[in-house]
Amino acid sequence: QVQLVESGGGLVQAGGSLRLSCAASGSIFSIHAMGWYRQAPGKQRELVATITTTGDANYADSVKGRFTISRDNAKNTVYLQMNSLKPEDTAVYYCACAVLSDRSNWGYWGQGTQVTVSS
Image (cartoon, rainbow, N blue to C red):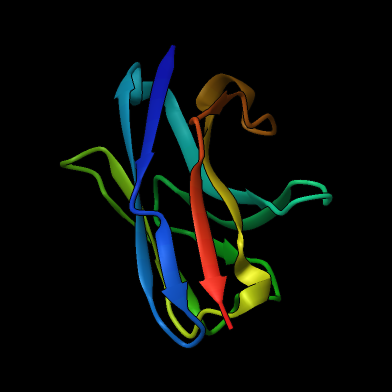
């Protein structure tokens, strides 16, 4: 079992920045990849960015060049640095992880943190 706890959300003006954190605990040795998803009101949850234990990162086209995902293995924490924020980035952001035994399944989720970007 893996537990994920997000932090760092809040209210920011368009063009501003926020950094989200996701701390993992439990069976952290089993983690293959971690990622960030988001869900805006009335919309489906969508992938924002992912990063593997080897540091390979992927981004949604809508955030490329503005968001950066990184990880601190010593702290078992993944970060999402969000710059040049837009009102359409407003959503609840969720941290997720996939374990080595089931790499294609984001089986563990955090509780979510609200990000609101005002125009």
